[in-house]
Image (spheres, helix red, strand yellow):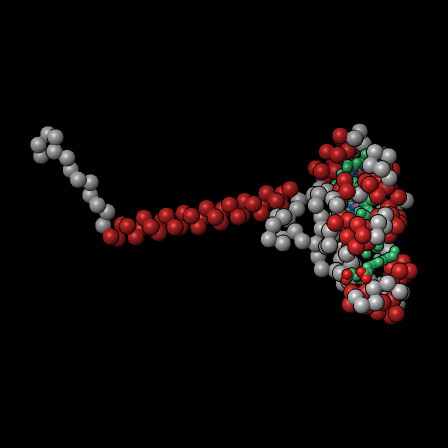
Length: 202
Ligand code: HEC
Ligand code: HEC
Ligand code: HEC
Ligand code: HEC
Ligand code: HEC
């Protein structure tokens, strides 16, 4: 070989090309899988399902009760239905009797109202699917939270969005805040509320 001569690079053989191609595609698929898994892990760690592809839609309820119709259109207060929220631990879902104070006469042509009337006629309580729930070893009480934030947020019903988001606009109620231990403790620290373990654990 004379100086100055150059050697043409060897062209990859057909078999090598196939191999490179396979590794390339495998790499892309692998990356997509890794990204997908990472996204799920991160969102699970934050405490909420991924808010895309319908993964964080609220559950189907036995009666498709629409908050927007009652809150945005009729202007009912949250506390009109969730009556115990300013008094105790649970906010409570109203009994069918309260709904019937209107639906005895309102909503004649609506199939979902028809279902409600059947529950009423048969004396069966509606088994609503729970959306928010802390584990049994955790003590959560609504009352002190509502009391503390009411003045700042224009009344009891103004405080709910702090933890539940804008329920008045949700056709199906879904959870929008993690309400995991870190979330509770952070808010307690920011508001000079107690943070010792026995505040929240029996
Ligand atoms: C007319 C009665 C009514 C009014 C007014 C009302 N709600 Fe509800 N709420 C219900 C019923 C019935 C359910 C159970 C069915 C469902 O989840 O949609 C419910 C469910 C909920 C849940 C989910 C409970 C769970 O299982 O975790 C939250 C949170 C909630 N309401 C907050 C609010 C807030 C905040 C407002 C005011 C902006 C409000 N509600 C106004 C009747 C009402
Ligand atoms: C203050 C009166 C009032 C109360 C109390 C009330 N509703 Fe309604 N509700 C209405 C009105 C008004 C409509 C709209 C009816 C229409 O569009 O014809 C409605 C609509 C509905 C619909 C039909 C939505 C649709 O478009 O298909 C359902 C289901 C319903 N309400 C369930 C309930 C339940 C469950 C409760 C009790 C937790 C309740 N309502 C309490 C007034 C009330
Ligand atoms: C500081 C956060 C916080 C605020 C503010 C808050 N909630 Fe809740 N809410 C929760 C948590 C946490 C749960 C789950 C509690 C459990 O599992 O015992 C819950 C559960 C509920 C439930 C279902 C179980 C039950 O207690 O009946 C309803 C309904 C509800 N909230 C309504 C409301 C309404 C209405 C308001 C405003 C008046 C409100 N919440 C304000 C944190 C909050
Ligand atoms: C938006 C902020 C906020 C969030 C989120 C929050 N808290 Fe609180 N919490 C407070 C404040 C402020 C108080 C003090 C109220 C008062 O003035 O007595 C309080 C009080 C309490 C109390 C009563 C303490 C006592 O002995 O007086 C308990 C129990 C409690 N929170 C549990 C929880 C749990 C469990 C969670 C999470 C599921 C949670 N909180 C989430 C702000 C929050
Ligand atoms: C402001 C409320 C609050 C305080 C204060 C608090 N926790 Fe919790 N803790 C929670 C909530 C809510 C959960 C359940 C949700 C979760 O797993 O994050 C929980 C869950 C736990 C769990 C179970 C974790 C699991 O994986 O199931 C342990 C253990 C625990 N807490 C220990 C403690 C200890 C120890 C302290 C004191 C240093 C403490 N907590 C203080 C709210 C609180």
